[in-house]
Image 1: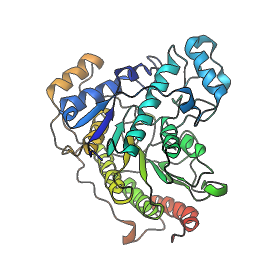
Image 2: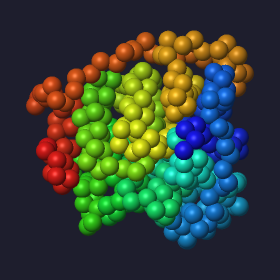
Image 3: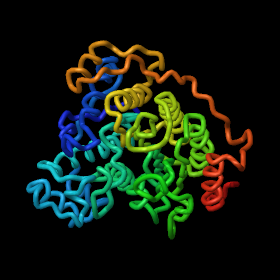
Amino acid sequence: MSGRAQLMWDEAVTGYDFGPDHPMDPVRLALTRKLVGAFGLDREVEVVAARPAGESTLRLVHREDYIEAVKAASADPAGADGSYGLGTLDDPAFAGMHEVSALIAGQSVGAAEAVWRGDAEHAVNFAGGLHHAMPGGASGFCVYNDASLAIARLLELGAERVAYVDVDVHHGDGVQAAFWEDPRVLTISLHEHPRMLFPGTGWPEETGAGAGEGAAVNVALPAGTGDAGWVRAFHAVVPELLAEFRPQVLVSQHGADTHFEDPLAHLAVSLDAQRAVQMACHELAHEYAGGKWVALGGGGYAVVDVVPRSWTHLVAIAAGRPLAPETVIPEDWRQDVYALTRQLGPQRMTDGRWPVSWASWESGYDPADRLDQAVRATRRAVFPLRGLLA
């Protein structure tokens, strides 16, 4: 294994653009890539542009009729078939939609292939993590589910155990659905409670079915959860499950929309806590998955102040050159921010909350605390199914 990290990047992914009034502004991808370059991380990773996912790859997860509907909407956006979730407010159709969605999917599939084959130890596609797309429909700003496709490709290549950890503020419903009955894939999602937020799924009682019973794990966090509770919940659930499952590869999704500045959700997590969980995923990949780590982006709609910093931290961690939270951001990047957005960019790689303090689950829990109630609900629902103590 080379040990070198790969950054999957093709400038054309910024064409994933639902229009000027849509919250998923592709400037977040461009600014992240520029910040990665401003810190010289290009020299620490191998930058790779993978091919778009072909139809045979897309069919590993998506139905053929849906792929054809995406192609038709891509060629004629005005004629998009709404029964497939296309041409909606969440997923407006646009010219070239199939091509750029397949390109993003191809970067995640390429990341999975590189890690599985040993061409790289870690691989990052921050343009990916589009975890809501279903086998037969678009959903929640997601057209093709690149995370599911990366996992499906790993299984096709011979992987027997793949763990997926999703820390986006929204439930990773599309990935859970794709592997609902598959015991080879352990899906773990930490997200805001489904009573409060799209897609309204991700209850602790959702644990998989058939041979996959116990392979779906959901931690439904109360609105307002901040750094200490978020990191506590992660460590109260994820490490123990990974130790039992023994994945051959860890795939993680790092939506930045848990942040307190995000306009579409209600958690209160800082950039510093996001960095702490990114570092934890890196450590868990080495501890339980032989170092094989595929890291994806996801949601995140504070597109200047939060997303570029969060995902640049992710790339730096994968590259083995983590950036200290107090690191000053290069002025050239802040000038790029103003040129592209007419906004002032942040000055440091921190929200001033480092180090993040949290109490381990082993230190005890408070039955009256809403965060602890959420963790207990998850452990009680799924841990006994895996032979673990709740």
